[in-house]
Image 1 (cartoon, helix red, strand yellow):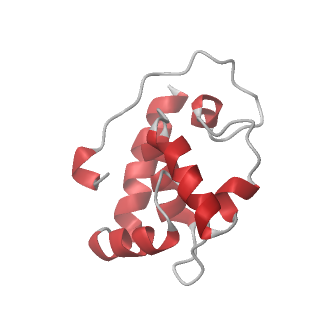
Image 2 (image 1 turned 180 degrees about the horizontal axis):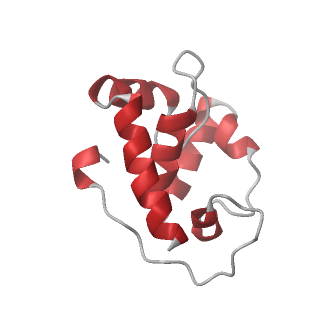
Length: 111
């Protein structure tokens, strides 16, 4: 997945929780799964990547991580990318650009 291939996923049909600032999470393929899968060993995170591969909101999940995580402490699988992969992507996409993309997608989901 590259920034150039960004697509906006279909809107969710799930009702939104009034305290959830990220309504796209209702459509996430990982919803209800044990978070340890996404933050465990490399073997667990590789299985998490398979979950992300079929997720309709993987793109916005990735931009959320890219815009908010500490570049010196990347961990877990977000949007199908492991920490090393996000580090490589960060070299191509500034945190400011990731934040811009996140704002666009978040605004779309909120509308």
